[in-house]
Amino acid sequence: MGKSRASARRSKGTPRRYRRGPSQTPGPTSRPGDPKLWDVARRTVATAEELVGLETPHQAEYWLSSLVSAWEGLDLGGDNPEKVVGLAVVAAAAAERSARALALLKGVAIFGGELAGPQAHAETRRLAELNLELPTWVDALGAAQVKGSWKTVEAFGDSEIVTLELEHRGYPPQAIAVLIDHNFGSMAKDIFVTKAEGFRSRWEDDARDVTVADIDLQEAADTLAHGLEMEQMLSDSPYSESLGRLRPLLRTYLKTLPPARPVEHPTFTQNERDRLAAEFASSPEASSLDAVVVDDLAWRMIDFGCDYSDGDPLRWSPVVVELFMAGWLPRKALLEVPVEAVPDALRAWVRFAGRKRGLSELLIDEAAAAVEQWTPEFKHAINDPSRFGPSKAMFGAMLDEGIDITDKAAVDAWVKAFNARPQEERRKVLR
Image (cartoon, rainbow, N blue to C red):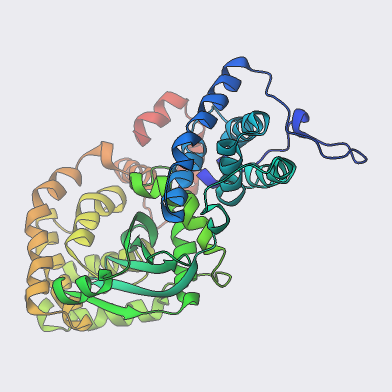
């Protein structure tokens, strides 16, 4: 996990030029002191000419969401982009006092963040006296009714798509579909919007190896809120461009759902993990494996599934095989068995897990085939020091220096001496 983008965007306080004294009557947002920033803000407001030319509230919401996301995604070297750019755009719109500027302010009041949203709302109230002619959809922004929710789960369980059906009165309903990736902590990874009519039936009639099921709005809220939170916690989140643009839209409609509850993934106690390892050891899939190989690798595969995926040690797909062989094992594992023993053991585990989950033989074969596909990469990575995580690198250095890593006193003494080494020496060990 890296630094949360959510925390990077969080307000650090209101700049002095935007503060109001306790006894002052609220006034218009002040013009930023930076001429270049003011010019950018004015040109941004000018683009709202396109906004007022749109025909439906759906189109306007997508446009506004893209605008808000554009400044939220800026890297300003530690400064809050909403505070710097978002409030400047609000100030420029308030100063222009035109129909396009007011439409923009009404949109930012709904889709903007914790700073720009309230300020834009205040400015719309001040400009109301101008009686400007606005598009007919303005009052419908952010007010679509959620007509239902459902999810589409693919066969391996790597991901699911949570769909909300939204309807603005007088307009055809739309579907907002969010891809939740369970291999990355059940994070939101992609989003797309389409006409609701016929969308579900295409999944039910045309898609293979998927399950479509209704979910209540509470489950939808829980899953989507967790997905956004996890996506913003990852420093190198693999989210799509579409999710980047439509995050403010999804955030706004999440507020219309029941308050989200924490998502709880399955948890396995150590006793439950031990029982699962023993069941695998006595299974037909493991019958040809050496007991030493099973003893060293079973707990690694179980712990990976429990602690580094979505909590289910039996969910193994081609993607999970890749993450384990090309990522987790090289980064974490100091193997006690030959590297050549790993593929056969993993292939047996994948077949055991697939049988336990009730997957079809076709799907089990597909997951098992991924082991062979990723074996060359695994054999290269497991011996590549640049792929080692810090813990593996340190334990490897201990073993190279003859330290018994089961001897706590010896390990503690080594770590103390390691921390006293010059930084360059420590860097060579940690690579």
